[in-house]
Each structure stands twice: as C-alpha cells, then as structure tokens.
Amino acid sequence: MIRFARSLLFVASLALAPLHAVSAQDLKPIKIGFQTGEINVILSYALGSGLFKANGLDVKTAQFPAGPAMLPAIAAGEVDLAWMGEFPAVTGYSNGLPIQILFMERIDATNVRLAANPAAGIKELSDLKGKRIGVATGSTSHYHLLRALEKAGLKATDVTLINLTPANMPPAYVAGQIDAAFVWEPNVGAIERAGAKPIATTKSLGMITGGVWAARKAFTDGSPATLQLFLKIWDQAQKDYKAKPAEVRQYEAKRIDMASEQFDKLIEGQGAAHPTFEQILTADFIGPAGQETNSRLGKHLQGIAAFLVEEKRIQAAPADWSGLLYTRPVQAYVAGLK
Image (cartoon, rainbow, N blue to C red; front, side, top):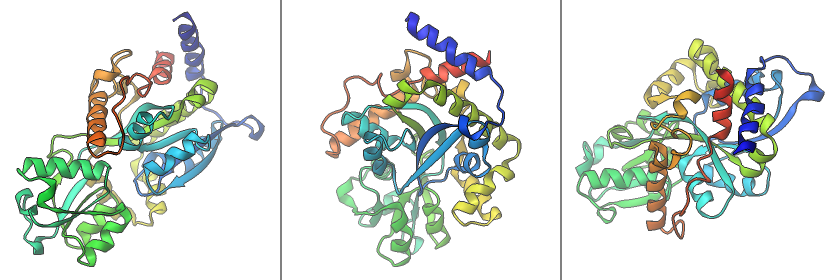
C-alpha cells in the first residue's frame, strides 16, 4: 500500500507539469493500436494535429480491421495501448492475456443500430421472424441482436443469422443478401443511406456499449511516466473537442473520406459521450477504487462474459475481474489535478 501511495505521488507530479513542446530525442515511445472500422474522433485529432508529438510522445500506430485482431499483437508486445470495444478486451482477459482496461473513452447511446429493409416488411422487432440478419458473430453486434430478439419474444432460431464483418454488411444489404443488420457507424449509416430504417438501438434496448482504452500489463507496470503523459494529452484533446468540435472532427472525417456536413450527421447519430476522467471514477462508469467490479461497466463486462461462454467463444468467465479493470493510472492523474 505504501508503495502504491508513493507511485501516486510520483505520477501525480507528472500530471501537474504543463504541456509543452519536447525535443525529438526526449520523446517517449508508445505503440498504439486502433480499429479502422470504428469512428475515433479524438485519436485522429491527437495524431493528425501533432498533439502527441508536440507534447512528448513518439506514437507508432498499428491499424486493425476489428478488436479481436489486436489481441495477438498485444500478446506479442507489438501494441502497448489499444482502442477497442469491450468484447475483445473481455475475450483476451478471459483467455489469460495480461490486459487492463484503463478507462472507457466513449459511451454510445445510438451508434449501434439495427437497420432493416422496409421493403422486406420489417417495421418493428417482431417483423424480424424469418428474416436474414447480418451480424458479426460473437461481437457487440451479435449481443445486441439477441437482446432485440428477446425483447420481441423471438429466438435466434426464428431468424437466419448471416455472419459478416461490419465492412461487408453494406454491400450485402445493397445486393439483397440480408434484410437487416445490427452494426455501428460508419457501416450502419451506409446501410441507412441505401434505404434501411433503424428499428432498435443500444439505448432502446436498455444496454450500454462504447470504446475502451486497454493496455498491456507490462506496459502499465514498466512505463508509468509514459502512460501519465498519454492521459495528460488525451485530457487536453477531450477539452479541445468540447471547445472546437469542427476543428477536431476534421481529421477523422478526412480519414474515412467523408464531407464535414455528412460527418456531423454521423456523429449526431452516434449519441456518443466522452466521459471525463473524474466521471470514469464513478459507479456510472468504472467506479471508485476497489469497487470496479460492481460498477456499471463491471457488470456489463460480466454480462458479456456470460454471453461469450454461451456462444462457446470462451471456456469460462473470469473468477476475478479486478485484474481487467485497472484505474490506478487514472486515479493518479486525477489526484495530480487537485
């Protein structure tokens, strides 16, 4: 406990230091992985604007089509810090990967949507019976669909599940190979622009979902100063987004090749919120120190594990969740702001 208290004092002192330009030889290296099929406004801004480099981080990025593809890279030490969904984080931890969720970067109310073809006679959830639905098996997409079917009094056997990657769902819809799809932006938006109508969202189903920053345990243990610097820069990027959203959004809009007006509509459709680090440490997110397992996110992750066991994606749910939800770096950063 004394050792941890000393660590808090050390990293808190780092949090108080002002952001400033750093010479190239003083840059701290960090390897960041992220999903290309997801929207990540703040990361694109911090990279594209040079915010990371200007304030001391030498960032090397690795791009992945989906979260699960990052797990081998994390295991091999090729990625220090990864932006991913909750599902791959739970999968990796359940399979023995030393991975830690540091904070929930974004929580989405309507980013994940069930978009259906009106021409197929689908206007509400009960109309899904007998229809072909695109899902990414074993993911947030699949989990949401099962909840939607349950709400309509249907079972998975009442529909035909078509396993597709998110990027392949829009062309499958346009080709008439599926009648509906449960997926997130930017792909659900593409499906809706092709004529589909949303009939369910994360919010309407009483669920939560979003993106998390997860790290290799060896990185959090071995590079606390680098991690604190990342948190400081990320905090500044969040404040920049709140102060000048149009300027911050332009980098992600450019990455996915979308006009600013169209991208603004996409962001509006996500219903996304970016919690502050202070909010992260409340029960609505990861919870106060020592109470992470019983927080909103903690209970959500346990539900995901039960689903993954049922789908035979993992052999068993973790007996101990304390190793996955690791808020000490955020605690230290917040302590340094007081």
